Amino acid sequence: MKFQLDTYLLLSACTVAVNAVPVPEGITPSSLWAERGNNYPTVFLHGILGWGEDAPLLGFLNYFGGATQNLLDVARSQGFTVVSPHMGPLSSNWERACEAFAQLTGLKTDYGVARSTQFGHARFGEDWTGNATLPSFAANFQLGSTTVIKINLVGHSMGGPTARMLTHLLTFGSQAEMDACASAKTACSPLFWTNKTETYVHSLLTLSGVHQGSPVADYLHATNGLYPFAKTVFSALVGINNVNNANLIWDMQLGHWGLKQNPGESFLTFLERVCNSHWYSFKSNALYDLQVGAQSDPLLSFVQNNPKTTYFSVAGLSTNYLFGIALAEISTNLLLAPFANLIGTYSNSSLPVLQTYTQEYWRNNDGMVPIASSRGPNSGFNSFNVDMDASSVSDLANSAPAGVPQQGTYNYLGAVDNVDHLAIVGTLDLIPGLRDALYINIMRIVGSVAP
Image 1 (tube, rainbow, N blue to C red):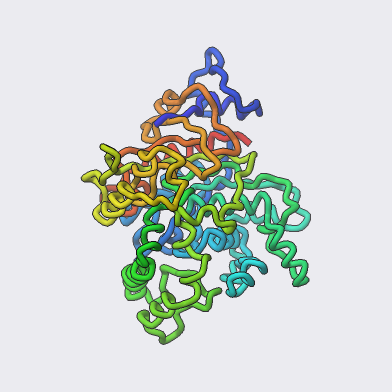
Image 2: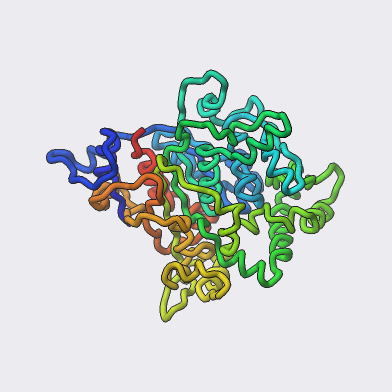
């Protein structure tokens, strides 16, 4: 993959409009890379069934890096402040965005008056008052503050659309929530303010982001497989973790739905209560948000890009496409191979979006997400490739084409070959260091975007 940041650093530093220009004579790509555009804190957002950095699964398994390393430390080695909040593993993008914002700013989680009324759950969730993970960013939303501290976002899997949702709300707020707060004569969360004038998300990069849904979710829904899937996931992951740690460190964050394991309640009882609850049947969970067919629902389609944010996307690729179908490569994780083959042969005439791009891009996938979905939302993308596995600054810079990234649209950096949905975050890597180059280059890219 290639990336055109060699000229971009110089252009951004000079606040030049986004146009392709040659590198000035006498300036090498390497010297341009040495000039960092920004040093904003970077927030990594986990995907479905994920967890934050402070609560490793089973007490030792990092979401970004697995049992052998913490890839967030690799990111920190590039001189950035890096945090990774915990969001509901099976919650909707709206709820996850609210949860991330509350943790970053040290506020009580506010899901909104209108939203909570619509779905019949409590307005508030966990209280992070006084425990902001990014106090400097939190200062943006304090009365009388004149400073502006921006952030970069990096999201994997469902963390991709969650990051886009969070960016939308930080940019445009929510008029529905403001109106509901006014009617209820109560204060609204700063996340929903509609009078924000600053761009708080400077850049956003996604890894195997589920921007247009995954046929896996549609298939499970059409075959009534969602219930068995959810029950299996809860039992295998939450149950094992609960046995290992009485504090249930794999927190479902469904307390606002009245779904929290009560003292003395057995896990199996809790599991049945979750899977038989109204939460499961409503359109406010990850299983709904990840369906291709749900992307046109106003619950999701209202999200817009910020015209002043620079968006990037990276896909994983672990299938081979031949004669109209895509099948899992031999290196694809055994847990993902059946899903890779499902996507690679999937057809559904009731989903016209599947005809938006060539069949190859909807069938080639990483074991969970098609390339077409990973590239960006249906608003489109700007295609240019970079070598995300480049081993040095100069190699990365020399892989860059002549143009520059566009603001307000997804700049698709290409697909990482022979890497499936879990491998791109190193969750099951047994050998440390396999993803170091990728994560160093991620930080080089988001750090290259000048203020």
